[in-house]
Length: 427
Image 1 (tube, rainbow, N blue to C red):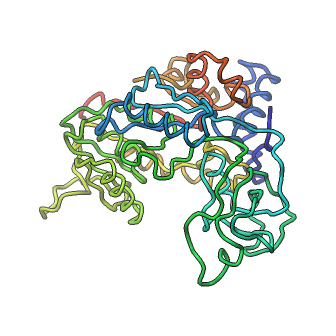
Image 2: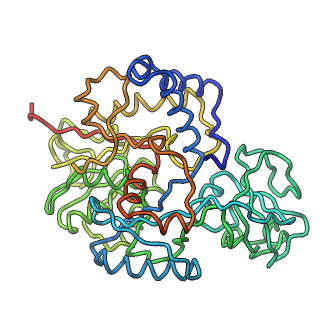
Image 3: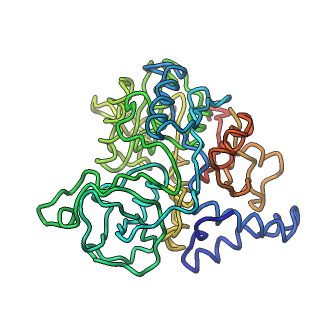
């Protein structure tokens, strides 16, 4: 079942992906029809949010059981008594899963409209309210307190401040305007703050705006798996090469019980500031963040100064985590992918350059890269098309077994890929 249109790409990107996902090795193994079915399923899944919201508990400050109780009470309050469970992941003991209800059919659309940018729209589909910076257009007579229907301008063609928009837009649900049109678009009006409070979103997910901020961290499931695979130990020295905004950095520090040293790097100063803010919020003291280019982090000679931080000598760390820059194509939901083929393929040389200086939840690697069956099993590929695209309503949720829900959460997440390398010698 597909509620939204399939994700769209630039023509050359679509041609490139078609060749990748319809390669001869896959067709030989699965057959043309099955390969085509999986590819079309993937395109549909990418435009829809994952079936579960994943949150990581900061076990440095509280137990999973305690936070689970607090979160369940918060969700009950937000959903006005609707009984949506909070599940503990059986293999990732610091993870809580909340089923996403939707898509909800038959919501009444109101005459007053609010158009938001694509990124704001994706956040709304994952439980956020609409904030002023994300608003591009509203109906001309919109006042504070009006019931409004919220739409996403997925192609980025709506002009800021327009009084109406007839281009391609996707319905996200209904809300109550917190501000009037004149307040939103006035030159002296608010530049931030809430613009629309969502009351009938198409996908019902809890809002985490200021909800247990020191105890919870919103983090996609494959991203969580990475730190568990790294398996950091208390007292070790760990390097996170491309660390912003700090989800994996803070997770690593938590798994180490805040004992040892976690060095976090990123090239952009504002992103490094965000790492430090997250570490402070989660009360983790073993993290040291530096603004530095990861491709220049290795030094073959000892520095003459006494400054701590990069560059580092070889074998300075017990473990290294590299979440290399990538295309971001697996992020969900995404209805219109704007990168060109040149941009998509530009990440490969950078990833190789960075590489030169396990709980197993994902499926095996994809055929077509020349790896043997045994080598494919050493990889973890989170492929959204591995499950049938389906909605979830409160009745089907109540009838589902917890094991089946966990299995769905493991598969219906963002698209992601993990490979683990173990140093075999010091040569």
